[in-house]
Length: 112
Length: 113
Image (tube, rainbow over all chains, first blue to last red; front, side, top):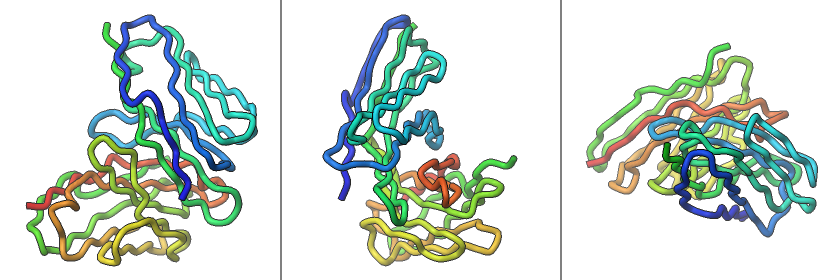
């Protein structure tokens, strides 16, 4: 079973601060996704990273896939209250059927 | 492009009863996955259907079963409901060739009393 560990579990910051959340595993993933989920809603896909060392940017969000494809990070610059939510990483294994594994998530609150 | 829809949005059932949850996949997507999301957890994979065949199953008992129809919509059936089955149930659709990218519906919140 592939496990994804996310840290920190909770994060409470002021508007304008920077933050980084981490997603780690002992397993290699063929790809990794980041989602954001708001209360009472389903997760919304933010990005997919596929290549080791890959960096993708989405406005103030920067996503990085580790060189060994076992870990990933999400960095938010100048956080805003609209960034509040549960950030989830999910990975798929190498080859074969894709059975997604989700981390427990990082719950972010950005205070105005 | 129509997104993923789920029905009903909320449901209250009694222990021992059976329930059916429904999901319409995003237009063009042929794969549907179902998840249970316990409080404070990420979504837990129940099973996945690709072109009407079960394509993988998580660690859930056989009383959790599913169907996918020719139009790629799907049902999740749970028999002999237990109190611990109370949770939001999420449906996600994807294209098999890019199956890693899941597009989620809003969920069905099931309460078992």
